[in-house]
Image 1: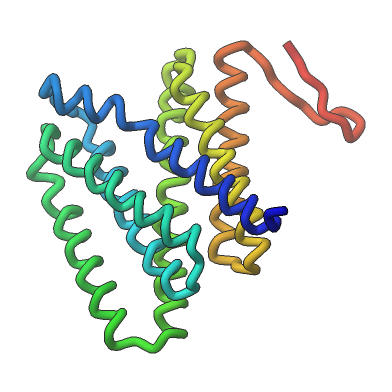
Image 2: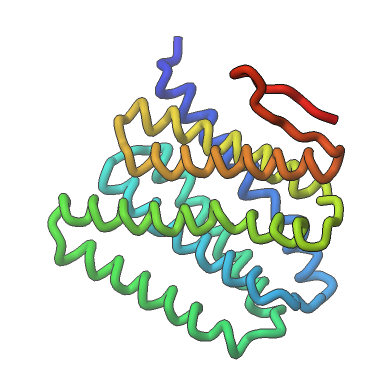
Length: 223
């Protein structure tokens, strides 16, 4: 019978792979139709996602955790592809030169650090940067929901399904972090899961007019 760690690892890997595939249809369509990307934040988000996968991959190597290393190794290829599509079809290429160079500097520093730093120092640095970039990715959907608050428009179903998948990813990595006793994995995943619940509430509120309030220590639904 498989151990709990194997089950959690498979679950985290499965949902992470599904999340990696989510932007693929849009990226392929952009590449095929040569549509221009008008929003500058999209390529920046893809760049940060690339950095997040790189740092998690390096951190996974220091911890010798197969699931953590393998999934973010795969994530590097997907996020690199999405970043290249976003950059090549963006209308803000001049503004994006700086973050693109920043990625190059970060990768160079990571490779340099892998040579000159001790294993303990590398674990700490990779863990801290992985958490920072991961949290940056976690809060980006709130930017889209802020627009929903401003315009009072109903959110589309893509945001809903993306939030569901992201919640499953974070929930799985929470248990994985608990199993391996790693706060660098558990903390950002916990924050991410909490933010996903906020996103789901916002979606339900604007899409269906559902609100929740605490009444006598119980959660009451209001239509």
